Image (cartoon, rainbow, N blue to C red; front, side):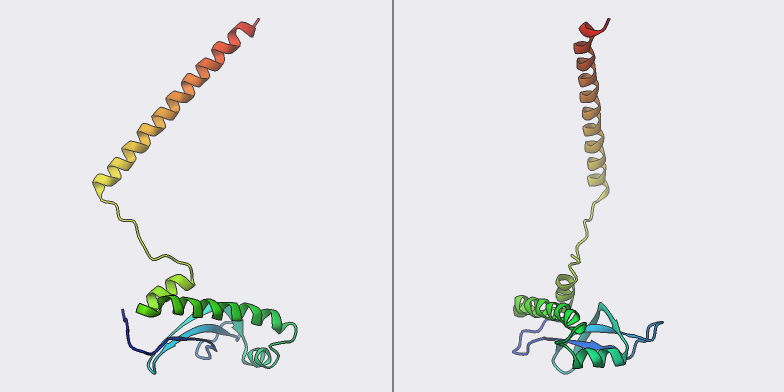
Length: 149
């Protein structure tokens, strides 16, 4: 867990990860957050390209069919830049990842006594609902009795 408070600023970019080769021969496109010379993290963002297709994408960013892909990729870069800006006072990669991928990193811890309380409260509420349904059923039948032959 690394927190820096000096003047450097993390930067976001997209890189084709040539180190990873998928079954179809493509490589994942990853979001790279770089902070200084030695501290870089990469996360896959759901796009895969061969080296040739990625070169075509870079060369034809404003032409169809690549234009639509670039719109999505630029939206991801803007999101990353906005998160970096929001976290800038105390930037941590873990916080960035949590916000970028919308995966809150919290767990609810319940001890045995709290769990027992929750179970008892659930059972009591269930009994109340069951009793209410029985009373309602009896009331419905009472209302219908005069109309029966």
